[in-house]
Image 1 (cartoon, rainbow, N blue to C red):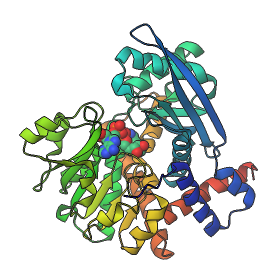
Image 2: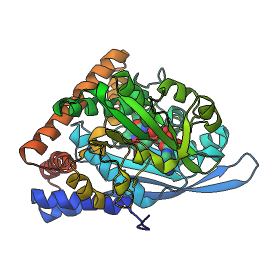
Image 3: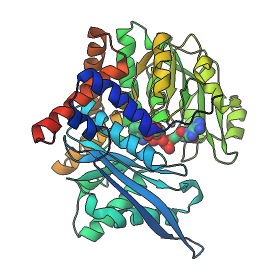
Length: 428
Ligand code: NAD
């Protein structure tokens, strides 16, 4: 194992710089787009159940809003850093641009472990987040959403706090709300399903029937579970799923060579995407070390957990059978691994295209909320598949025509769109 420490923001900048050079962007635009426009670093004092006060560090970072209000999730994670949030805000800008929705890029985070907080403490943390920065949030400024370890309930507490302070009703201030409280049907499934809509299109281009493929998955949270559900529904077979075990403070891989039953695994997972080890053993799963997921002899690897998982140190463990790296998480691959992946002839479905289904459905949620008219679930999925397919086709076509790595093709389209908006506004 290498001891290289990866900084996601440096990775995001390296990816940007490479394509900015290819596009011959002028220096002003480059300078503007390679860093966030605005950063807020703040603290949130929370009254704990035992009467003490705990102070949490938090961030809200706006990378770019030339194409529309900033959009991006809020993560709760014990290892959250400003640089992770910077990187994620930048990737949000490219994500909204590649699927061509009129939104910019932002991201938020709180350094905390919600798994150790009571519901009351989580509620006070959510309300505190909004209280500290509500002047910078809003439907026309910056619109948060759920991300790692945050959910619809957290979003509703945040909305309620915002509406209490501002004395109005602003459903488009936040997305990922519960259905019936301004949320869109299909938001829960959207990111994972979107991943598979893109994968399905790639397999079609590669003339590989999805029913003949196998996959290994890292992460069984919101994205991983729904990607797995759609992939297996279309006939694919998942043989391994890796996730974090809070009690043991390490990850495990759950394997079933004749195919995991995704509904069954979902029924034994906790609300943070951890699978119950004892129950999995009872159900006949092999329980292997966490890193085993990447070593499986499958056609498709689907990282759906966290960033910096596919590195040159672990890449030699990737089976020669793997044909597709389907990036469902944000930033799962480090830039120094891209050349190795390309050399091996593995096709990459780049993260900010592949997992854009979530933000696309968040955009649908805003549209429906503004009309005060909500679509049925089939309409949501139909529109989602249309958007994801259109975005994939544009990226794939460019990659083939210009012999570009898929990641570079996606960046080319996204950066061009944002640079154009910046130019039209007269910012550079
Ligand atoms: P989540 O919190 O619901 O689930 C995370 C999963 O990863 C859990 O199953 C957890 O056990 C697992 N995990 C954490 N650390 C791990 C480790 N070291 N090894 C193996 N598994 C580990 O999060 P999510 O919403 O599913 O997000 C997953 C990824 O997708 C993140 O990169 C996130 O930024 C990205 N993403 C999420 C959305 C969304 O709509 N939720 C949208 C776009 C991108």
